[in-house]
Amino acid sequence: MKTRVKVVFPANRSDRPSWPYMDYDVERKSQEVLGKLQDHLPEVEFSASILQSTQEAEELIEQEGTAQPDGYLVFMTAMWTRIEQVLARQAHPVLIADDLYAGSGGILSAQSVVQKERLPVVTVASSDFRDTVEAVRLFDVMRRLREARILVVADHDRSRSDEEAVEPLGTTLVWMDSDTLRRYYDDADEDEARRYQQRWTNEALKVVEPGAEEILRSARMYLALRTAMEEQEADAVTVDCLGLYYGGKLPAYPCLGFFQLNNEGSTGVCEADVDSTLCQLMLRYLTGRPAYVSDPVIDTASRQIVYAHCVATNRVFGPDGISNPFIIRSHAEDGKGASVQSLMPLGETVTTIKMNPRENAFAVHNARTVANVHDDKGCRTKLAAEVDARTVMDNYHYDLFGWHRVTCYGDYREACTNLAKLYGMKIHQEDLREADA
Image (cartoon, rainbow, N blue to C red; front, side, top):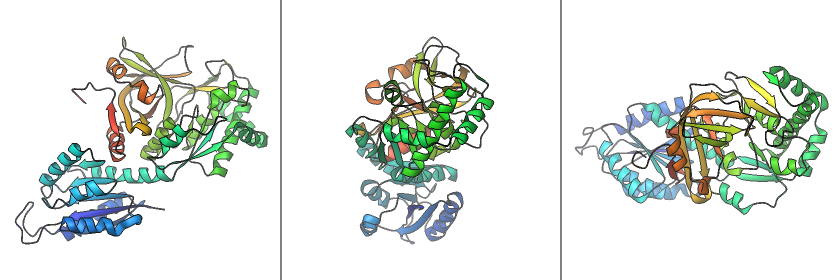
């Protein structure tokens, strides 16, 4: 199913003097804009309406009824109609983009309304049409998240908190207990598991603690997770790995399985952390790249943040991108099982996010990767990045977001914050002081 976007073009009466000039051909402009949108976003289905009054805007929303599109783009081909304000207040989600010199005063007026009334609206005023395209692409991310299914493997009771986390996004949680996952593990094909065991061992820079049989068990766990996801039609999986492994209910840690899933373009996340799974899935849909969850460590002396965890990808630029070296290690806290130490690319900008949909809160910061830390303390993968560490520490809001953060290679700060705006979330810029935010 394609994402459906309604494009609204405000228009003045043809004889009315106004910017950009009297008798501006909105019909011609609308066809030009639609053509560009369809060329850039073939995965999106566009329809258009040219409106001249707020009454027509209200009638349009009413006519859509329950069959409303996945998003509205108001392309400002006229000023002072207030059509964009009607859509901003009554439709959702809404993007307002300026046709420079045609709607420029109107979009500034609309932005004031958006800020004052805290409306979940994104505005774009740019001569680069690609900025509008990237904003429209967010509607597709939202639809995919709304239709996504996350497989949660845990033995604790279904959490109301987790259900509240996915409600604003529309994502579905599918629950599975450890006994069911164990049956998938027992049914895993031994020969295929051995091929993955050999592949990981051969591709690794080295193997430190785990023996061949331990890595084989990890391969069987990967096949179990992959099959369970296929049968449950899940787009992501997260496992209560620590609780279940410590309780003797998992025959292997899922770390290498998550590593493989993320490298393939799927999504595997630790600790039955639904918030982080939503973040990692969001970044995958937004960027086509895998992210990874970490327990960040702050070092104000070096102005660094170290993203530490025992699960990470080694294809940070996507399944078809270059691979970086990795080492197969034991799980750090207990020295058991098999996990991965990924030696990630340096000199790159990364974007780190976390959301708390229950509180309509979203956190984001950027940093630049500078080192892969080798230290037996803490988790195996430790990616160090330069940032104003003191400011991040002051803005961390552990009470809202917990310890985990989710990191993706690339500068996606604007796209992430725009997405959070469309969800109506309050945005916390973790690396900016209040005066700069």
